Amino acid sequence: MRLVLGLCKVAAFTFLIFTTSAALAQNVILIIGDGMDDHQITMARNYLHGAKGLLTLDTLPVRAAVQVVTLDHNDPSKVVYVADSANSATAIATGQVTSRGRISTSADTDSDLKPITVDLKNAGFAVGIVTTASVTDATPAVFMANVAQRFCENPDMMVQAKIGGNWYADCEDDLIANGGSGSISEQIAGSTIDVVLGGGSKQFAPMAEGADLTVLEQAQAEGYVVVNSVQALEQTVSSSDERVLGLFSPSTMPVRWQATGGVAAEQPEPSLLNQVHEYLGDVTLPAPVKCEVNPTYGDTPPLATMAQAAIAQLAKRSNKGFFLMVESASIDKQSHARRPCGQIGELQQLDETLQVALEFATTNPETLILVTADHGQAAQIIPNNSLFNGYGVPVYTPGRLQRLVTPEGAILAMNYATNEFQAEEHTGVNIPLLANEQGQGLVPSFLLQSDIYGIIKNYLLPETP
Ligand SMILES: [Zn+2]
Image 1: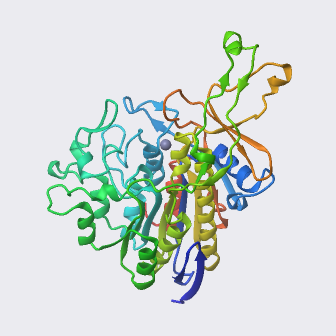
Image 2: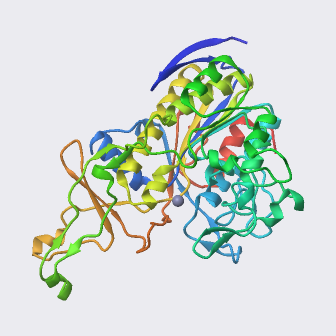
Image 3: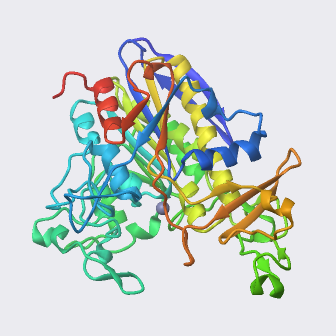
């Protein structure tokens, strides 16, 4: 075995990356942008690099379209055309199509579906999960747990747990007392996953079911080194090869950017005359804004820093190679909240993470890098000046609008109009799958989302049925 000593520097600190001989180790780095359809990618490209610029994403040689398939929870013989993160990430993790809300469980009988991480661990690969959401959130959870319902994130959320309004999570069958595997955080604490990094410390604070330890204490008893600062992460990765559970915020990690003054997209205001007749009067659009640093971001570890720490630790823990899933979660969450700057900053974090992955692949060429999304999101780019304004008609969007002044001096008008409620919803567009050179010949130009599972499995476990 040949040891290669690489020195990689990202953001605030430096890691030594020991990599095994390329002939022995094979790795997959799966980067998921939650809600990252082409509309969200285009708004980030326009703002970050200009309309003629390129994201690192755009330099990847393989680009395919992925159809997302979701089963109807009430009648799994039928489909619905819009997914959530739970069912769509389950398709990637298990190769099985299911219904919304399921965490690696089937739509019809709530049976456990085996995530690819189980076979990979059994075959001797190291496995890491990194996210800017809570590590118990749907996308990371499907790789580490099986539970009936995505909101069963901790032991206190298992039975008749109120989510909001009149909606309750119920995972009674998953209680340990009922022969289940417990909540998502309990399953992570008892898992064999090597590195788990993200937000969600509050999900580990409750007492574990039937135990006199909190879930966090249980994770430590199971051998996890728990860290909650970037400094502690750096120190652990540079001094030990233990399993690491890093929890850097109570729930979703703060995003990097916000719009000027923290404003979200707003509804245009038609004049009284326009309300009398759509051809009359005028309309006041929300004032243009810029993106600025989110004051609550503070010393939040960047996604690329967490990914690099995970890569360093995983490379130490298996000579065979590793599987790392990295999720940029708030492309989705900030779109729900109608906040384009939050989305763009989070997509920038994903692009920086891809740079880290590509840099690792230069010294570890048998590394398949896949970049994809789980489902589409609400934000869409619309004309800043409607074509119809040229006819003297005061046309305006029925949705919420935010107009960003881009660094290249144009106005990027972002519209959110899936509903009139307090949060936007996902959309049913197909999503992209991109890959580095290792994906050439493995990724067809059009595929089903559940086929991504097979691509990962064929690359790392070609002999396994
Ligand atoms: Zn969402």
